[in-house]
Length: 199
Image (cartoon, rainbow, N blue to C red; front, side, top):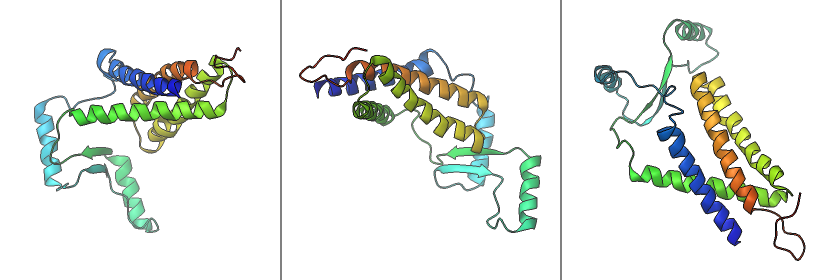
């Protein structure tokens, strides 16, 4: 049990540290996470959001899809607008928020601990022998995550390719680092032994 606790805590710390390094130190996302360029453009967009009366926080998109997909005329108009004008998504918080409140870091920390715990439990249930096999198992969890989030988002939500690639690489490195911690500490014990099985 102690090894599990150590693995979860150390794994969570590794994930948190990697998140800080990838975003703040290495700048892996700098070229893909774009701002609008200047305050005047930001103010103009904010004015449009206020004019659109978007009172609720949420994820908005345009152009709007017809409510009745069986309406051929409405669908034709939608397809024409979709093909002939800038399209996009907006994540809006109309009232504004703090840039990075302490609660955001706390939630990230708890989430990273939960990821580490899930990885530890899955590796423990797998009963895989050998560090490399356990490491590959955790990296495989990262691959599944990338396919289910970054690739699906790129395909269905039109997330930019460079952003999706940066996020995918970020996640895979994070899981590779976590995998090293988990693989080293979570292993099936031999009968009557508490040491790492060989192989």
